[in-house]
Length: 195
Image 1 (cartoon, rainbow, N blue to C red):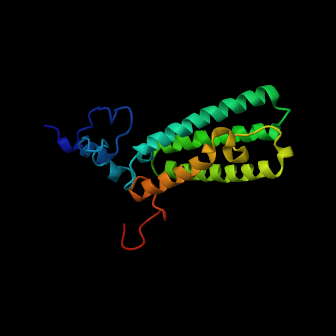
Image 2 (cartoon, rainbow, N blue to C red):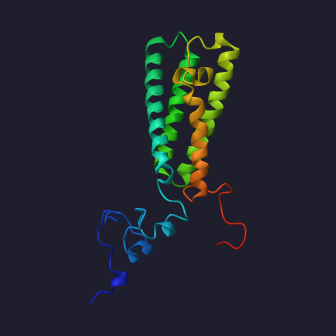
């Protein structure tokens, strides 16, 4: 009779035979915990990071708003670059850059996990710096921006949402980090006595 401990893992929706199965996964039952995460996932993912934790609850709305802005800014920049690039190249390239930042933020917020958490923080911080810098420059030197960008005058053309969105995003990421859904502020290992 085969030893059940060394029996290969059966194919389920979580573990497939065509991928290597970690030794710990073969021994642990593939049951679901109350929150929908696979039981034992915390041990296999390297700590208290829950995949997709930043996209749960109100985070879903945040991801949706970022996705809408990625689409809107990308479409706007694409049309402007294709049809009128010579009129205001800096403004149109800044709109394309804003769209890229929104895409990165959308994906990182939706995915969750340590790396995605860090990428989302960087994207939201880049967006905030961009909105403040471009907003200030577009007011101080109107000649440099003959046509508006997504971030011109702090996002006035989009109801100032581009100014508020990165702040909300950073606050949401801070909240999920405190609840164990992202990387703690210090990152890395515990200071005293941790493994």
